[in-house]
Amino acid sequence: MSQSGSQAAAFFRDVRQSGVVWLVRDDAGSPVPLAADGTRSLPYWSTSARATRAAKIWGNGLRVESMPLDTWRGSDLPAAADEGLLIGINWSGPRLVGWSFTPAEVLGRLAAADRLP
Image (cartoon, rainbow, N blue to C red):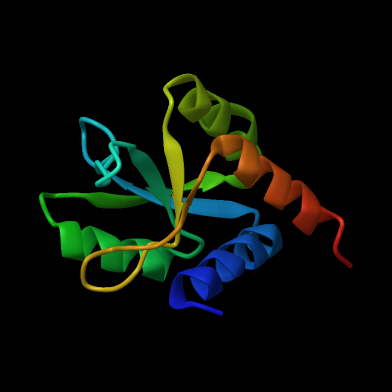
């Protein structure tokens, strides 16, 4: 499994167990980086430590915040879909890279994780 694949797997496992997702933001909102293909992703992390590393890499006064998984599912993911954003999952490394999914794909993966023992 690739590094991005293992990070994505960790994301779904961690948020299922904790019931929390983590993001970085400032007073204007969260970063939504533009990819080479012209898409924008709104990144989230599965632990405070992962999000803290991202905030330090990006700098610019970003702070770490948590959100209940149910709120994220019911509010933020549908809003991201309405805005045409992808969802970045546990981006890591010095350039904060990783996989992005459509909000519908994230909801599908969360539903599949809910069915696990």
